[in-house]
Length: 302
Image (tube, rainbow, N blue to C red; front, side, top):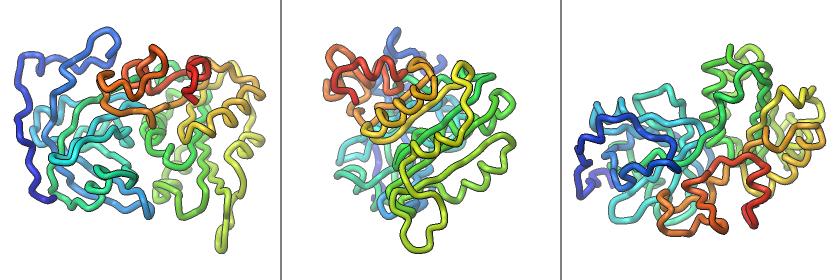
């Protein structure tokens, strides 16, 4: 794995000098372009998840690569295939791209066996993003379940790095058990940011767990809500969307102010394989981030 090389070069057409286009619905860029990259470090987070720091090799391309919180990239392992992975790092960091990857299939299993220095390819970034610009001067609820903290982490980092742009910020995170908690080394760092409140809950506490036990919706009962001044982002398994978003609705937050990520439906990132489509909607081109009103009206999306 260590010396994998891509069999082709990144294209160098004049378009490379232009800014990346995030509005993929109005203009599709060259989605076949691959950034040659390497894994610079790997951190074991849980038994099934690892955090990869990936560096684009060409310095100019590395500086040019930008993304918005909530977007994803296609990660290619030459000879094995590619997988869509939400970006878990800060958009302000141009040195490397952070990806939290769960071992779930052939490509991700190969990545989990890789070592620092292994070569991969990146395409993207793709998809819509969390509405962080709309959320300015509002209270923010950032709610994650399980692996959902990975795509939500980019929004958390944006909010903490631009703290003065937002009112009160509540991060609510729930998992099945304590050993499935992601990024636990950052919890105290987030709590130290003025006006940021982090609450953790697990469904099964077990020996040694002194925190909250129950479902993540339980954490909403103790938060004062100003419905017209609040935005919510919800990331996690689709089954949690209805429970969390229905609870938010009971608290008065409009569905247009709730946003969910359907990143688990991603496949090719280009709208060509048709495996992510819901009726006439292509999740990879029109999503993966949708307001809850739109998502709930997409048949079988949730």
